[in-house]
Amino acid sequence: MFTTPIEKIDFLRFFLGNANGKSAELIIDKGFVYISEYFGYFKEILQNPDKKFSKISEQELISTFEEIGIREWKENYSNNDIFEGKEWELEMKINNEQKHYYFFGYEEYPSQTGDSTSQKYTREFRKLLQTLNSVSRSTYFA
Image (cartoon, rainbow, N blue to C red; front, side):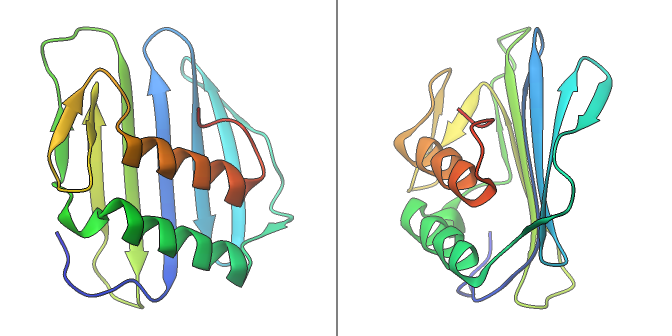
């Protein structure tokens, strides 16, 4: 999807949710980390913007992106054969570019080669979730 190496994360939004339960959203913007939890259509902001997005956290996230092969990912990973399941979205702006990169899926998860696996988290997707938990100092993405 993009060819340049990631040197800087300007903005990131990650959402993980399912049809019959809680959903969580992580936003990294202007040097702060925000986490929200959804119960159906109701949104609750769980953390005030007092968690700074440190350079160490940024490097951890960039390293994970390289390790999981995000540059090979397709934009859409959707398994439309399943009616109610988990969905995810990753949106980011990098390297002071104007372009937003957007990836999403429904019951399908990317691997390092850009291929996908249905209904089960790939090793790469699980690594991304672990890093997001580490960066946000939370356990919402499991």
